[in-house]
Image (cartoon, rainbow, N blue to C red; front, side, top):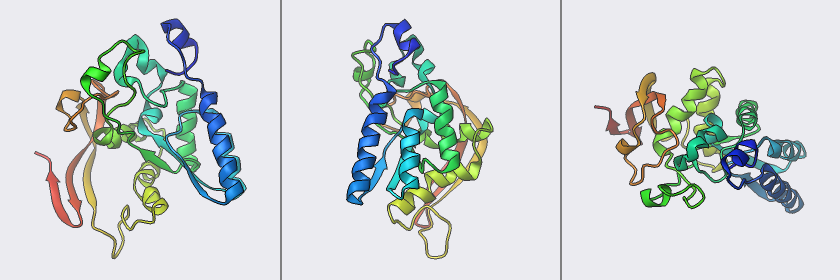
Length: 234
């Protein structure tokens, strides 16, 4: 987990934020040196953000993503040795979480990702140090991100842009937007519909979610892919 006071109190070895910041600084310098493009994937620490900002200001072709779990949860969700919340990179401090949310709002972080990394139950239901890193995330990306809207932490359009338009732009794909000639990929959402997440009811073959037993809001009512209806809520 995140190196800090909580890890020390729990008697667990910590992963320092500096480990991420040092590698990010190095890779950004290499991208600037070579003129290449770089994606800093799933940032977790406020310590990394100044280097990313400086690189973008210097014209480095840099972009960044953040796992939705790191925008909504923090290291205290690992209290009681909750292995379902053992992620890589780890959930960090509340200050880190707030800084990451602000970076999404400012456009410094371009993309919000699901962090989908399913693990077998027997790999997660172990003592914390022995348990595998990772969690399912595809089914909780939307309601997890909507938590920030419902709390007033981030505008709705900003969140949707980071999950649709921006990823498509980075990959030069026509999806992720409502436009003439674009693929008719559409979801109809009730953004205020509350539900309590029961990880046993997730469709994924694995069901280890840090959001297990948490109350979330936002249900997909209908999904269209290429104009064809592929899902309708019961």
